[in-house]
Image (cartoon, rainbow, N blue to C red; front, side, top):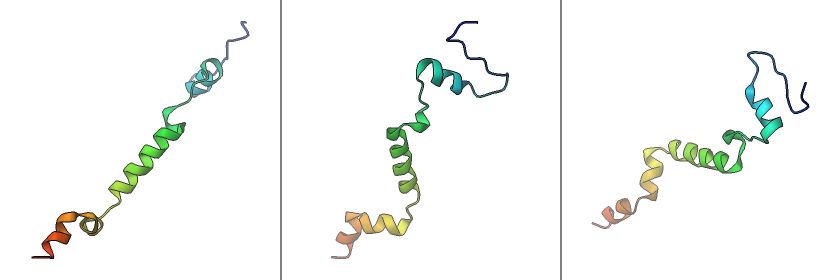
Length: 64
């Protein structure tokens, strides 16, 4: 067998082989992607009350 060949049984995670052979890093493990998902979850967790507090239109309508 060749030294660079890594045997994995059928049905196992292919990323283990890719990590060993190609230094593969899944997107879900990179800090940039983690940060984007954290920002997305924070935006989706906002309610209408949170959005109204941030809106400049609400503060102007109170002046009328």
